[in-house]
Image (cartoon, rainbow, N blue to C red):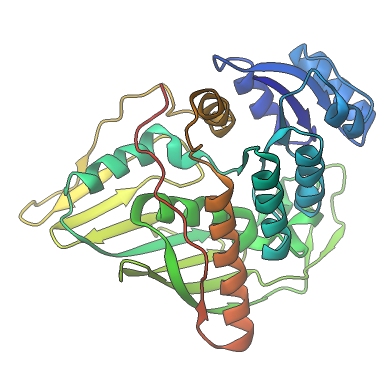
Length: 356
């Protein structure tokens, strides 16, 4: 599968490193609106570069576009890729809103192409071990979960922190997809949401050396507390925040009738995975055996390439990404209206097991 990358920002480095090593994929070009940035990535990874995203989209040497642009551009670039007859895999979120998300899914269906989106961390060794334990009944019947992504925000270190405080970002849209995708992949689709939101700072101060001291306007809620009711009847909570200095709360716990599963950070591919069942005095550390326990971003691209070849449904697929997008949109709507929001879409639990 010949891959062209559009967007050569911070996240592109790990994608380019990993995509060069996955079997069955070939990196053929990189591009960016900033040609100089594309050239630097080209030299760093030994991949040809083209002067514009349009050149990448129109190239007959590209089968699949990896869309690593900023969130505001995800929909435009993905639709352009599909229009050009290319499969497309986008960084999260799938789009800025569900209207754009539906356009992507509809065009992919019309063109007979695959559209998918990050995150793919749920396919890594740690979270797949959690899936294995849940499916084997290690905690009995799941009854609830608690997810917490609590941080001070990325402005202290990121070279372009402005994008994290605009519409389509914030803690929910930036890091929520890791948690929500994991919840859907492990436990099933979400049917209703309710939430409360707040914005505790009107601006942030950049810490990166190139922009140190610059003020960052905050346009979106930066502390979001949501309750989720799954289609199965299971209920749980998710809190995402850029307003918390420190925390000791676990990233994700799943509670069952026979015990509790402490899952690894959904923004990672490895462990730790910890289990404690009724009758045990201590937590067990569960061993993880897999290549994909380190940063394996791009695993979803490889899975898409394999799925296209074999006629399978790719695991990090567009319907799942759309479902997560609708959940996030519903959470913010619920926070604004103080009313429960029904989630119309559904997503199948993806195939279990680490790619081989």
